[in-house]
Length: 78
Image (spheres, one colour):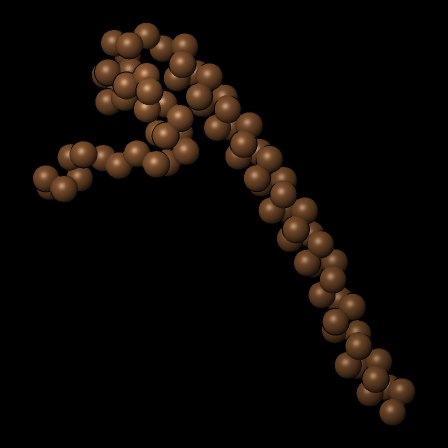
């Protein structure tokens, strides 16, 4: 009975470090993505209006474009 109990409980104990590693990895990825987006917004804000126009953005659309909320207006015309 004791061997059976150890066999049943042991896999559950082994799953915990993987879950904690996944949680840590997800948090780290979120933090890295946040700083990458901030850097992209800063870089785009430093461009002049002509350069933004060349890449298809207006100054008021920078945050939306970086966060992925912009759609390509030409996509429907293909």
